[in-house]
Image 1: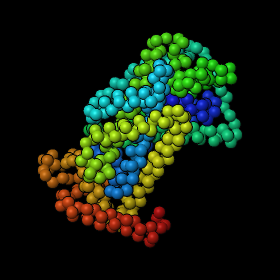
Image 2: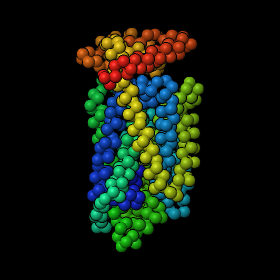
Image 3: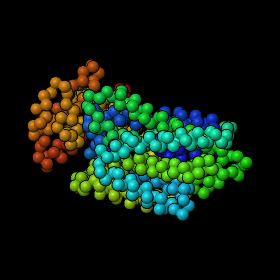
Image 4: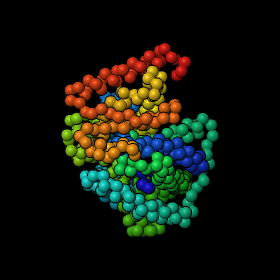
Length: 446
């Protein structure tokens, strides 16, 4: 429940010139589609105890995941930049003497302070920060409804309307699915016995309700800018301070100083939106190599903060264009990530099951062993706990086969550092050789 999703709803009329009903339908259906991958990937956290980028090694391999990690870092930094611009607009609406650059720095420093203290502090802050924001959004809704300035803008027709619908839908989808690349980062501390369906539907409810409420509220309030052909306080406020200006036009004339206080609280809600981004940057950087693991995570958090400040300050003056382009980038790259992850996993599983029957896939086992799981992360009920407290690390990786069995694959003990890399390379080459053989000699089965 943050103001960034409210800003997404404003784009329906400001950029894509949609009516009220068609914009509401786009918000509804594209959000329903966009959050499904986030909910699905969230279920992997309790089951495997791994962060999302480490899990991606099973799909992309040791080297391929480094490219995915680079994209994820760019996405996290971009999210933080866009969110900081929205917060700076709200601060500027309260006090015009505080320009956009100062507001961005204020948001960034507050976010950095929270993320420096680790997961528990981030989780506690996220657990409570939505309450005041939700109350203020209901105040905004009640105040705007009391004014009677809502305008039911009719929907368009023809190819231009279709283009606007799909363009705005891409933006909505990109925002909704943006958590996919680090969905499992925030469910790893759930017990391994946690129901996957419970995690899925809890994530679904936690995303769909605030997304629909804030974006539809933004669509409704933005409709008031069409009063008198655009000559009104809503359009004037939006031209001056963007998202903060139009919220100020709703609150300031009716609530006075209390309305300014509400806007400041909404600006600080950006901290809750940026905390997962910065925290996941530090986790993602550790996937790139051993040298990045030696650097303390708070150093990566500080560097990411400096980078997104440098990006957000120039983008403040043309926020709509920055937001639209970034949401399109998010939608494209995350769509590619999900497609490659599903296709790679399906192809490898199919190929190895044809060539090896129901025997465990050794390449996946080796990759899993080198994902650096801690002992006992995937402990089955029948395994004694003492075995996992020994010095030899044991990995259990479950795969469902066509005959209904779900055998456990037990990884071997760790070898010497030099031999470990050669074994991993040989197994990966064998796996891809099997895939090529299946595709060449058994094309009818694919």
